[in-house]
Image (cartoon, rainbow, N blue to C red; front, top):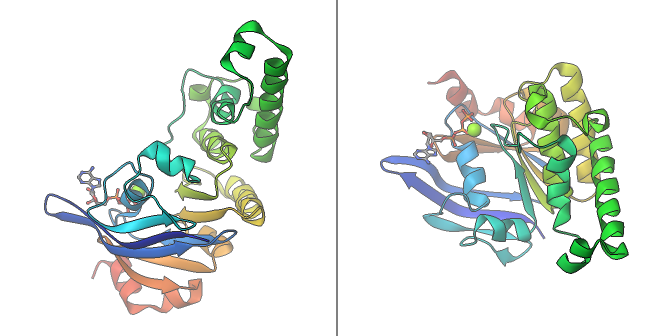
Length: 250
Ligand SMILES: Nc1ncnc2c1ncn2[C@@H]1O[C@H](COP(=O)(O)OP(=O)(O)OP(=O)(O)O)[C@@H](O)[C@H]1O
Ligand SMILES: [Mg+2]
């Protein structure tokens, strides 16, 4: 059982954005993915989630090959994500943004909904209650009825995280989830991500803030120019000459 990336490569014209990348995220573990700007971190998330086509290599989710699957197929297999540049339904409320992910799990039929039958009403209430619970988890209950686009950037990120977790993923890929948050807010996210892991969700955490990564990850992969140049504990990574060279640009 794991999210497994094996020998994944992808080039854009002459640029090899991913070169033979292999990594593994186990359920309940938080694995870091770091690297300088342009290293290929976001590209890797796009390759895993079916946003970009993979040239060579495979991606599997708990043994199921998802290499050739579409965005929807990979999501169905249990992989969710957040975006480096927040993508919310800007004209919708915070609550609506989260219920959208939950609505797919409703059981009542379209006809039940149309006719306003009790089953549909019950489901709608259940979805709303679940969404409010998730918003409570991310500290956004009091913003539930606010329009998403009017929120501060750090709050929009929380809504994205809520939306990504609402679909009950097995694995979640977080692309710089605390960018734009202050230290207090980031500290709250540390607790939140730990609670996801305690529930058995495997997390791939992309982040530039090393204090944040070190607080959450026992294992870190370092990407540079599309290649994994090191992996290990925070202590091991910080001693690696290749990593030091990559960050100093030598
Ligand atoms: N669709 C695309 N077409 C062409 N080139 C692309 C495409 N997507 C990514 N690249 C290139 O792939 C390389 C890796 O970019 P990527 O955004 O994955 O880096 P990153 O590690 O996420 O950087 P950052 O830390 O700044 O977010 C860059 O050279 C980028 O220009
Ligand atoms: Mg990126």
